[in-house]
Image (cartoon, rainbow, N blue to C red; front, side):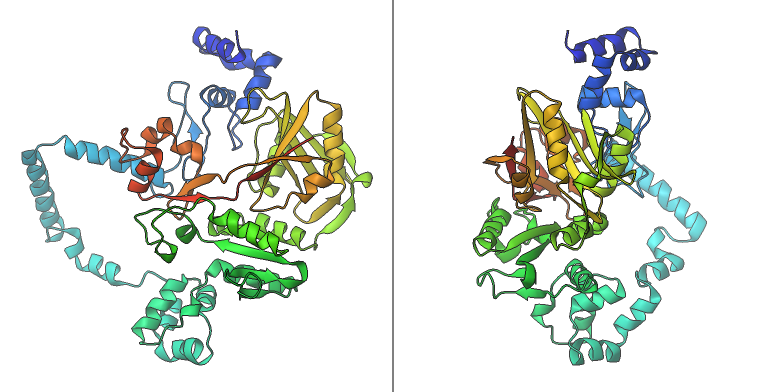
Length: 486
């Protein structure tokens, strides 16, 4: 019997104690640890087993942590409707189904009863007719102090027209979207400067580089000529692309860049290659990453620009790391966070963990003879010179077979892996995720088996992309990965 079959047998025959029995069996427990997709710090043994058996994560499509209930139900309760949109969607779907089951006569009876109750309590048939509700609806939705600046025509004229500050710059100061600033500029009858439409996130990254003392250019057309570099650091031949999900993800029903009606899956990798041919390293950042993982992105930028404190691997002690410490370190310092692995190896400097490598079963090739490096990263403010080579050398001594790893082309040139002794085996095609322009939905969540669980208007006769586009989701393509082996 396979470990999975043994576990299912234990669950069936020992429904109250299967968790303890599985944890006591090293073979079965190691299989659970390697295959569990739990990303949050959940203590439940049963939750880890359920995740491994059913290949499900404890993170909902909106990025919230789902709580494990029981074996028959799995993960649920990812938050109230006020916090998690997928909860709102489930409630909406339930209400829609309930409404569809009613006859027209039942609907009219319910509506009449509701109106009579409103008239009895408030003297009007509908809530929006109440004076206090009208006042609330008409009130500005932003802070009064900010609102007063936006409606102050003299102040706006001085800043936008006379001082020629961009809408993004003003938006960054006021804490609103630049489109909001442009709306009020239009209300004041100002002539809109079309060059002012760069994003708030772009401005924030520019400000961060200025704080670091890094000279840089914004909206640069001089290097690539026919293509714009959002932010360019001449001294490093390093450029940053701010990819807003609204404009860099594709849905044929949306207003897309340049009026595109055909999806271009190689849009980002082609620009990256074009920059590489001209000696420029391109670092892609989405607005979601900047707004949700800003500390990690800032740390990556400092590292790329050579501003980190350097220590040497020869001065570090190599130790195995507990899964608990590995989870805490990776969730804090790695952009993709923790993943369950077989090996967690760390470098300690003055008894503090400064770099980690995790490796285990290959995620994509079940027949692979060896291990895949799942994660490798250092503390955000430190570069460990020679650290990667030291960790990989230790891993080679403790496994039989090949070591393979993936390098995200959006964030790296792969030079570090070549320095460790890896050989470039392949370059994968661009992958993708889905987005409603505010949240990220991983590709696996859009499979047929998953879509029917959560997508409100799911049509089993349509393809994945048709269902997602019909439900107002857009597809974002990355740059693919370098595949290295040693």
